[in-house]
Image (cartoon, rainbow, N blue to C red; front, side, top):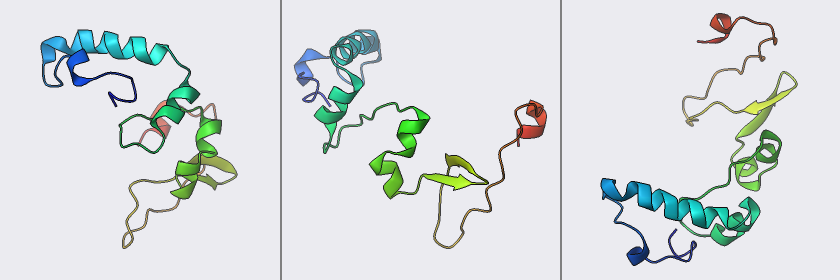
Length: 110
């Protein structure tokens, strides 16, 4: 991640130095603020850095990575996240339809 940000290890406190976290936060925040989300997505594409864009739902549903993993499904006419985790021998149960907008929260929570 550091190389993608144009930094070296000497530019930031060591990862395990909890006292240095505020400084590290400020350095990362300043770097990430210098480009758009899409620019950073291109910078880190194909790397093993733990960097991923925060997507709107409509973007996530059309994201190649998520489509390849069938992460977004349509159930009961509603596009939604697929059950996770998914195992080959114990598939997830059926996806229920979403609750109506006026449904009390305690009836929704499981």
